Length: 346
Image (cartoon, rainbow, N blue to C red; front, side, top):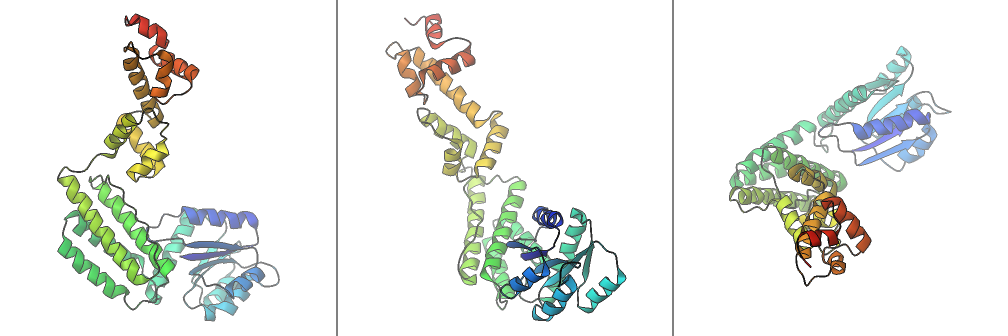
């Protein structure tokens, strides 16, 4: 959804921008968020671009918000206008209604009031615009997809997919909006299925970014099949836990300076999510786990007579000998040499 804010007070304008990015409406997908400091600036912008939702102040410079609405409302029938004002004046509201504006927000604008206003605007768009896919339609589709994918019902998926194609066939949808919409559908779908208890460990990228509606639909269908395949594999016990896979990779590469980001990329996971999941499953951070494994390997190597203490750092991925000594002593309470002597290795 493309949104424009027209407000001459910088603090209020920035506040609205921030609140809009924080709104958690399931089908409110911000694809573009722009701002103008006055109606004149907005007037020039509207000559070049169209927006789904416009928030405008009333009291501005030479051209006020009502003048701007009066000029552009008839040329932008699909746009939802919201007046934002610090004045609870009936004459303003009356004029706004005459211009076809249905929403009037009084300052200060709270997150709750803004969220409710956006929700009503979404419903208005759904009712009046045949080129807009409304929240109720999207929610029904997600719920149906969730059911057939969880049940591993490919025939039902085909039926549901054909129904979706028929629903969007005649809509003149902008490809950017459609890509964002299908990406949102897949992300919500993935999270809901995961929350059912099916931990989808494989890499799954829900982003869709193609050039045509046909390509977008085909990509959606392929990704739904991929989700089904992932659930099938997990239920057969063939799916490898990502944390176990991470541990295996760390063990095989203890002599390398492997970062959390590298391991996350190999698993196809977001680094932040992987870091959170790793600590949740192991009880320690990625760094702490890697250090512990390196120190355990160092203890094993110190028991081998033919391995010099000075060679061990490079064998466990720590090329700095003083750093190795300090870390080992912190981990065991002894220096590497003292540990070797204690263990009777001369």
